[in-house]
Image (cartoon, rainbow, N blue to C red; front, side, top):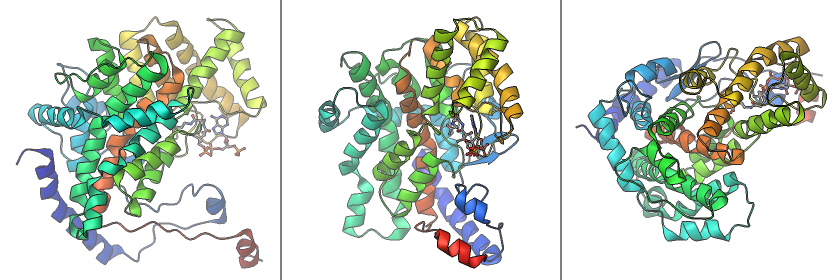
Length: 433
Ligand code: CMX
């Protein structure tokens, strides 16, 4: 078998057995302890989730099914020789654990193109009914939810599907949804910023290039950026807000439309995905207040002013990472290759020099280094995608690939409904009195 669904299907029984064996031999062993600080502090440091598609190392950053970003850039099939990876290849890898061949990726591109060709008319009507000025993330989450009536899983559940087969309609929903996201995102972009003139899907293009094309940005370089961007934002293990929200809602057997829409609502928070929008606003503030080429000292003062006014420095810090995010580094390398003289890139580089020192001196943050969101906006600006409050939508399109791949595995592995225990302050006071 060489199509994705068949390859995945073959892998499921062995992984089910593997999990059963882990449960049997290690089920009662301890993974760690839970302190009161952890319960108060956003459960930071508690290991309490199973997530197969990726794993985050605090020092090294993300690995997707064991592969680092530079390894993926080398190993995953590209649209052109030596180019950036095709996100379809990563989808294949996340679902099967195997690096696909170029033929397999091309077949998957064609399949997604077919599944994503047409958006149901009512989705356009739902979008049109929202008031002018509605944030693109509100539009995005609403559009995903508007597709929910198409869910194969919800229909199969109503008919009484056996739990052994859940993964199958969840796979169908997930692939249909991933396929339709470029069209949805592009429609939101065109409606919000380009007077509503939509650009049709081009069946000759891969999934990421189609996103760029339908937004109105054509050319090999912007396609390459979109492929890289859509590859690196997919997955960041299971505990971040968008992944965890998707996982949590899916655990109630809400279908992929419900669960991914929930994940998007979490991604829309300024401490999470919306940070890419906030970074751009912050960079514009600098240029507005100081001018286009601030000095190191001026930037340093600006960073301190941000901190002193009680705001966070967007794009810096991380809950788990303790080094520069490799997703930042690969975007920096892209900029060095394609836009080394861009003034905004130079400004971002200056912040890279200055901010970690200031945050370290302030002494509060556990990680002073930049994350993925500190760099993405500047690349998009360079290629003409100037509207920063759209940026989190692009993050969301990519995030679907990771969280929905895990969602398929969660159902294949029969993972339980999530229901951690909570306590009151009263309980804590009495327990430790
Ligand atoms: N600027 C200012 N203060 C920061 C900071 C930053 N970039 N990062 C952390 N801090 C502060 C925290 O707010 C916290 O302050 P309090 O003790 O007053 O509450 C203190 O430093 C310790 O925080 P931490 O343990 O280092 O970080 P957390 O795990 O609590 O938070 C994160 C992680 C990402 C929310 C935080 O670093 C932050 O707000 N960064 C800026 C927003 C951002 O870039 N988010 C995007 C992250 C990537 C993504 O999900 O897309």
